[in-house]
Image (cartoon, rainbow, N blue to C red):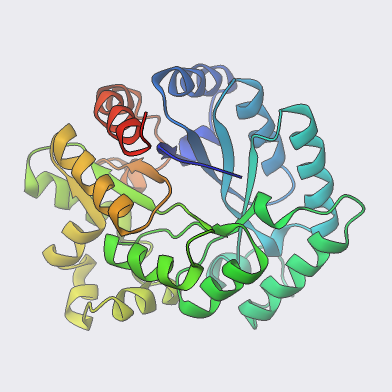
Length: 301
């Protein structure tokens, strides 16, 4: 699957009033965003994907990510085949191993063990399903070099989350030139740096304690002091870009220059969980001219 331009990452497009979600995602499609990415846990996630596909005409709908512990490869492949056939190949399956605390809350006897092997086994299942999920139709939530290598050899690419342009550059190195690379970029749409850092800390507080993210940030050169106390200013500024449309577009260009094919923007705010489940429609509208135009130019359009 080819994907370029800027997309939107939004948990709010998975939860809430179905009519409001349909109206919001249809507007995103009209504004020129090329994809939407939603978190997905369990077989019910495919109903959310289908709702977004049915409400749009052009954009790709992607799971960012589908928690592999909560579904079966067979059921996933069946849902993927149905949605691809019905909606013109616009469904991109993003798969990940999630995090131990989330996985072990899914079922009493479920244990988060050997995540690399679990991913390989899940991909094996997608390969042998009655209608397999083609490698180019799936991307992996990959941060470290070992998972990025699996994304290179067994998937169409990678969807890294909570990363910097430096990570994008290193991920491109592992993936090679032909694989899809779509990092997520958190955005605080405010010129007030203190407000932006407050938004960023509220958004990141439930991520920084998770080993997958903390270890990746250490690999990127951040220290224990950076990770402590809700995150240092240096860390927050690196992960959550703030400012006006031009400042945010500049960060997107940094990812593109580092090797990203596309970038999905997640707007954060001061509400619960950093506004993850809110529909930030005013910000999406205001950012669209700068983000969609800049990426059309980058694509030669």
